[in-house]
Amino acid sequence: MSASRLSVIMPVYNSRSVVGAAIDSILSQTFGDFVFYVVDDGSSDGSGDLIAEKAARDSRIYLIRQDNRGIVASLNRMLALVDTPFVARMDADDISMPDRFARQLERMDADPGLGALGTQFEEIDEAGRKISSGDAMPVGTALVHAELEQRQPIANPTAMFRTQALRDAGLYRAAFRYCEDYDLFLRLSEIAQIDNLPDVLLLYRRSPGQMSVLNHGVQTRQAAYARLAHRERRAGRPDPFAGADMLPSLSELDQVLGRLGVAAIVESEILRAHRYAVGSMSDVEFAGYCAAIARGIKGSDKRAVARCLAEGKPGRALRLTKALVMGRLAKRYFEG
Image (cartoon, rainbow, N blue to C red):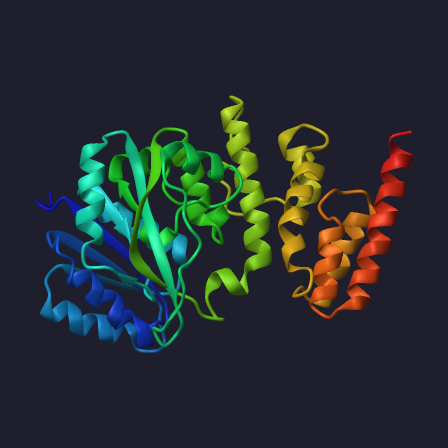
């Protein structure tokens, strides 16, 4: 068993231009007694060779090379090796502040009920230039747990976990591969407290090619499913997606849960989340969005129409207005 108190896990895929800085920020922590697990998930850009060079110079780095299996498999593979009481997440394109681990461990030691602890962050661009202060993460367990019911309240690469709480929650699930952290935090919140420090302890790199940008639509859908599973567990019912490798379609939800109306509720959640992106949706996505609104599914309002106009898309504003009118008529018809 490792004598260290902390393990760090970092999945890497084609990140050669930035992973060196991420690794250096971990190796430069003021708290240096840790094991640093890094999975090179089938990179084709030489990321693995760069990591291997750094591992040859610092024995704390434990490099695992594998064919591309995705982030969930990579994270769970590293967690299977962890034998320390605490484990910290890190992403290959971010930079941790030097005292991040020391500050988080101090708080975790002081509060044994904490299962996870995040921090504030600042955003940087691909060149490392600061671009914003980032979204303010809630501070205080009550605020964090309340916000968790709507969205992810912890920036994933800032998180430190109590290892046993992670395992008790069930680790990461393959079915939620585009919102694996949010699904985990929901399950973790049912057995432990979650909080954020008020201090900026990470630089979060934004880029057009990152997963959250490229897969926003499916991420939004999976987040709605994660909240549904959370509500089912809290109501004392079985998790409808336990053991699943893939999530069912919306049309299958009522049958999977054995209740009518579940799919409509989840679809409404998804549409409400999408209303902030009405101007940037593809034509196919926007057509599907309007079709759902026209069926009477709640999830849009006049502000979404105004957003289309503000973004210079009057045609979309008109189509959405028509869909809203048709949706109100459909609702009146079905309500009698």
